[in-house]
Length: 276
Image (cartoon, rainbow, N blue to C red; front, side, top):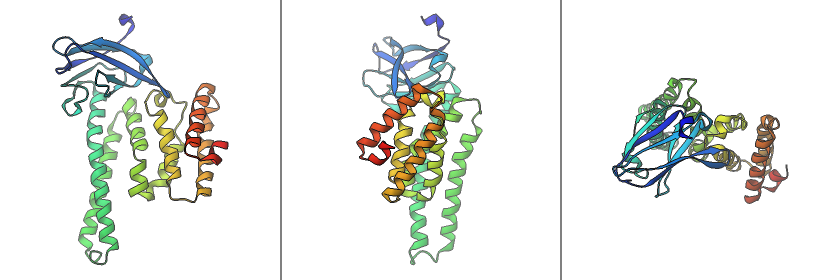
């Protein structure tokens, strides 16, 4: 069967000698095995994947801690100590995976700094002891803008035809909800609008590993948006309508999403929305 595969993931994990290593992929809410091998006595391995696996996959060894990889059709090389020691992992081949690795390291640090600046900005604008200090306020606002611009510039530079140019902004959206709800409530309307335009029939989303998280994050943000419960239910109905717009054309995905969403809403006692 290996002869029908076009792409490889190879590398060296020096602490994982003579151990099983697996590559798995995503299909909507489910995962499936792609390939499996054993590392040699030096920790070398080679796995294969095909164009049908286009999307996101993850490597798994005995410690059961996944390392996510972009399966975009490129050959990938990885070196490190073990999959669970992510700080030792380096992508030595595969441009999309290198961009993914770089953004996965830089974006959380930018978000952390941005949250700290937002906290300081509130102190300097609302506390009379500090609000007279105009220079620090301007510097804070300037630095906030610089951080946001830097993050956006990285994403804009990615080749439009690449999988990461779609995946990284979508992953950013899905992972942003708790920070937006807690520290940047002014961004809630735009974040909800971004969730509503997600196409659940898009194969890129279906194979991304974000399928379930996108549904959960969307409705968690609606529930925690600071609105009255009646208003939350109205917004949830609007979101359900937006999701169904494309899903009605794909019965398999329609059933998959609506069954999961119904169970999710019931679990959180959002019965008015689950009935809708």
